[in-house]
Image 1 (cartoon, rainbow, N blue to C red):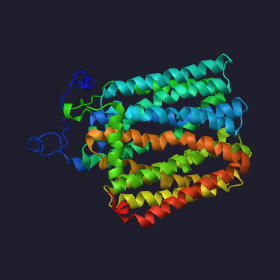
Image 2: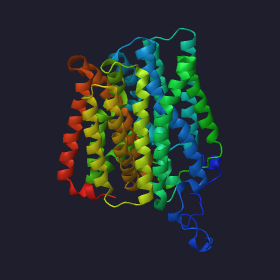
Image 3: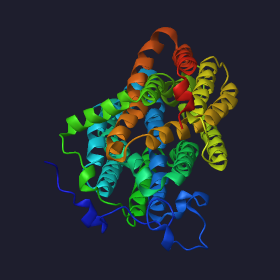
Image 4: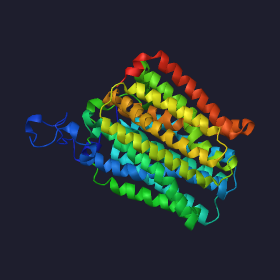
Length: 441
C-alpha cells in the first residue's frame, strides 16, 4: 500500500505533458511541419523545464555561496581554524548521509513540486536565522553548527527530486542539452555566488551576506509558481516501503557493471577531490598562502568559468559517443590539478590551476549525471538520484572532516595533494581495466 498520488490533481495533469517537441510525447502526425525537430531545439524551449532552470539559477547561487559564506564566517568572523571550518561544513552536509535516500524515495512517491517548494522555503528560513543570529551577536561556532545541520537537511530533501525531474520534463533527444544548461546555471553560481556574497559582506557585514542568500531563495520559490509537473503513474509508484524501495535501486545499480563502476568513481571523488577543492582549498588560501579566507572567491570563480566554457563546448558537440571515456579523462585531469593546488606556495599559482580544473569539471559534471539519468529506468529515477546525491554531496562533509583532522598532522596543502593522488590512482586503474565503462553513452 502506498501514499495517494495527489500530485496529478495539483498539477492539473494525469499523464506526461505534450511539449510539442515531436519527441516521445504527443503525436508526431499532429506536429507543425514548419516547427524545428526536437533535436535541434534546446531544452529551455520547454516551459516546465525553463521554470525549473530559472529556479535552479537561484538555488545553485545559494548552495554554492552558503558553504563559502559559512567558511568565511567561521574563519574570519569567529576566528576559527581549519578544523572548525571542517566541522561546520560537515554539519551542513551530514544530513545527506541520513536523509538523501529517503528523499529519493519521496521523489518517486510524493508531490514533487511540493517537495521542491517546501525544501526551499525551509532553507530560506535557515539563512534568515543565521542572519538574525549575527545581527543580535548570538552567533557562535556551536550555533553555526546547529543551524548548518538544519539548513543542510532542507537542501537534501529537495535535491533528488530536482535531479529526477530533468528526464521527466524533457525528451531523451534533449537530455544532455538540459543537463548542459543546468550545468551552466550551476557554474554561473560558482562564479557569482561567492563573489556576490563577498561583495555584500565586505560592504554591509556578515549578516547582510546571509540576508542576500535569503532573498535569492525567495526569488527561486517565485520562479516555481508556473511549474507544471506530470503526476506519478500508478504503475510507477513503489508499493514497497521506503527502505525496501531504496534497496531495489541499490540492487539495480549493482547489477549494472558500468553503473556500479561509475558510482565507485563518484564515491572516491566525493571523499577525496571534492572536499579538497570545495572546503580545504579555502583554508589553504588563509593558513598557508597568507590571504583572507574571502580571497578564495576568485579561484572558485575561475573554476566556474572553466566549467561554463567546457559545458558550452559539450552542448555544441551534441550527443558525444563514449561519454564514459570522457568522464574518466576529465576526472584524471581534475585530480592532477588538485594535486598541484596542494603544492602551491603563492596565491597567484592557484588561479590557472583552478581554471583548468574547471575545464575538466565541466566534462565531469555533464557526463556523470547524464550517464546515470540516461541508463536508469524512470520508476527508479528518484531513488537512484538519491544515491547520486549521497555520493556527490553526502560524502563531501565526511571527506572535509577527515581532511581537517589529517591536515592537523601533515598540513593542509599536503592533505589536498594526498587526496588527489588517491583519486588519480583509482580512476587510472578503472580506466585501464573497464573497457565497457569507457564505451558507456
